[in-house]
Length: 367
Image (tube, rainbow, N blue to C red; front, side):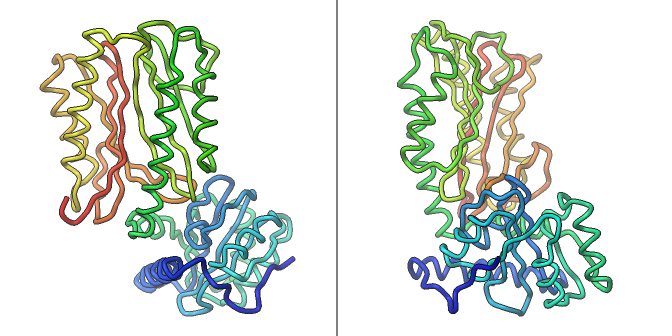
């Protein structure tokens, strides 16, 4: 089954049109530089960031694709295993040629590839493509070199446009509302899942599409966050959370901690130390800086403010678009670029009143 409009659908506004043209231009320039005649963006299950980048549509099928040629049809073609996804794609208007895909007989996709006839095909999320489908593509295109284009798309998406940053700021407002709901509901006797229920209600009311949330409560014995449990809050508990709602395809994450009742002196010292470390991480973020350098700026604060036996663990990561994040570990040599999003994050594994703190920030040309 195919969904198609006779002509391009008018986009919501001129900003949408400009954003789509910017994305297609950047992708095609990267394709040309990599010697790719065609690019196939693959979205397996929840890893839909690349397909959403081209379609700006909310998808829910088990597999979807976008096929783009370096000099072919301007918007490319979309494919999904779920019929409702086709309506979402065409309804959004960024891609107007959409086809239903059978898992067992992906003829719509292979016919599209045959028509494109690429000599070199790049697949974003090549590493996650099922072996049977990859074999089928190889048989369909025996003379085509098939390579990974995952890093290519990661690099493109890491640099945000003004249009994207505006969306992310909107998502940040939802994050703030979620944190306010979290703090407002804290009281002795409330189970952890009651906190999560209050947060979910608040952010979903504001339009959040999804939410990845972890939580932990207790004293100094707590060393990690998990899904909510029936554990009941007690006065003096440190309650930590990783709150990551998604709005319009963008995940925005914060990690925060709060105390049920009055904070102890040790908890206050921990809060002050973590705040100082994250501020140092944010101050270190600017184009050309690696995740390792941001982590070092944070860890220097911990080393100066904690005992020699305390091992800090700060993990800055890159923010991203779509339904997954591209993250980096502390020793990553990947450099920040202008308009790249970073999330300086800090946590301790051996310190009293362990706390979690992370904030998303944007690297601009000036810092």
